[in-house]
Image 1 (cartoon, rainbow, N blue to C red):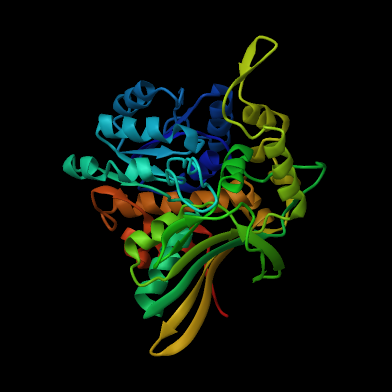
Image 2 (image 1 turned 90 degrees about the vertical axis):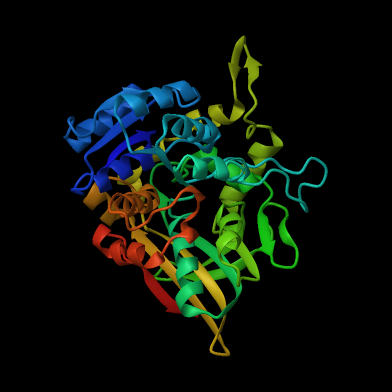
Length: 402
């Protein structure tokens, strides 16, 4: 497989590192706006022939198309902020190659009732173009990270093999990671984190469809496995809620809750109050700049925090329902230990855990095990081949009866 990797930040680097030893990978172009960053990753990989570097401006669709054609790629892997999804998604379509991302096109809150009604939902732009992709015989895989991604594969597995009817699919994410030497240091892109956490969270109920609530609503205590323990989790906007009901028809409710912590939520609320979460550019001493980009520039790069991070992160799918007339609850999960991830791939746990799903998906596509046309989420595919490969890729899953 020949891949154009757009974005070699923390997750992009992890994708390349995890894919490197796989014999099915012929070529992976490391394309980034910051050419020095691309050079840094290429040097760590130590294989310039299979991992050439290119500068790219992901906001310019024509540059995406040009690189896809130059390297005759089979797949464009989108590993940048979702603000650029439209250009990369449309660039892949125009270039006639398959596409994959880990977060779908952005939402827009309802203009008058944002905490009750949905406006433009995550992925609406992409799903509206599904017929075009089908007619062209192309495949766009959307939401193929860990959450969304692996968590959705778990949901499909539970629906197919473990339950007859599902009362709720609840994605629950938490960990005990901490970073030494910083007063505040997010372990993932602050740009994406602000987008997810300050937008109105979406909930799905079969009787109501999709609706929204206020950020950080419905707090609950959830006990995470492998020594992480009980953590308060809250509603956050996330793709699984938009994806699962499209393919899993016997589910009554879908939620996503994240263990953010009080300090993190306070920081996000403050950014929101001050307007520092805005994507819209303002003029500061004659220079145009987006406040959110300033916040990101002031914080440490998550890609370079691995040697200062300690602990574990857990991503998983909590499913409640019935099997053979009896009530049943399980939590399917994956726990990544930061020290292990640093030792194996030289990447911190959060980005490594996010990266392994698209790499497994690439293998399944290359071998013809997963196939299709149009715009498809993880629930559209047979979960077994994916789950069978997780341990071999260094990310074994666990199952806990609740």
